[in-house]
Image (cartoon, rainbow, N blue to C red; front, side, top):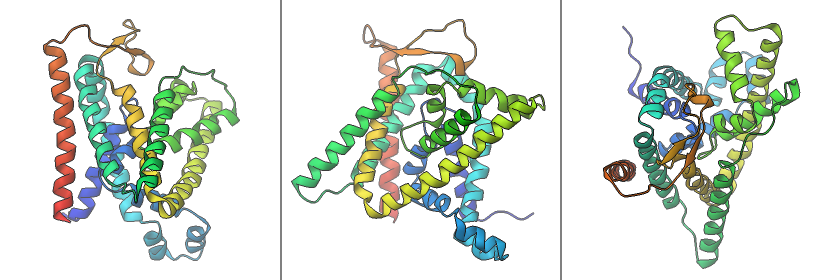
Length: 313
């Protein structure tokens, strides 16, 4: 039996964690990639889907093409993501329905700790840069907090709208702090898209639904390739301002992870259709203490992992 090298197993595990994050409403796989230190490599690999790659494929330069797109890295990550989504979807559904406060508290701490790690990557030179980076982070946090508080807009059953939804959602998915699934929900397309995918897997989708799904996938591909190129250029030319903005996005997204929420749809069993509203606890009790303890433990875990990783470099 041939066993994959340890580096491949590590990429699969990173993908597994990203996939697990993607099944949580409001959490982005990009956040996990940033925490794990593979964000820039992922963006660079995706951005290499271009004419140069197609030229190498056309000339049957398979090895060069695989190296150019970092294929081994993407395959390992992809296997992990699919495995994570498939194996953790049921567990996360249970946790978010039955143990919602405690689950959100853990993710609140993880994202808050991750934002601290990202902030440490920004090293301003002088008071002017410090003010500029803080301003960018605050603006990004404000935008993300505003975005996650918006209501759904109307849904349009058209090819153009499905293409647009795919392009926008996939861009959000690779941005730390912004969930692609949540953007789909805001656009009013989440239930429609997931429903079509569910019926397609059961071979029950109509011809029109399959066309819509194909258009949606095309939008995802176009948005991912174009946006990854922009992100790669920005990270190369203005890495620290971009990191300040990404850290701000993560802080703003904490609004969705607030552990104390009221279920506005108690009769709805499907997680994707449920609605929740944040609240302040009426009194400090054992439940509140445990939530804050879990959040602090998660935050310290992220900081400890970052410290261990930094000391081993």
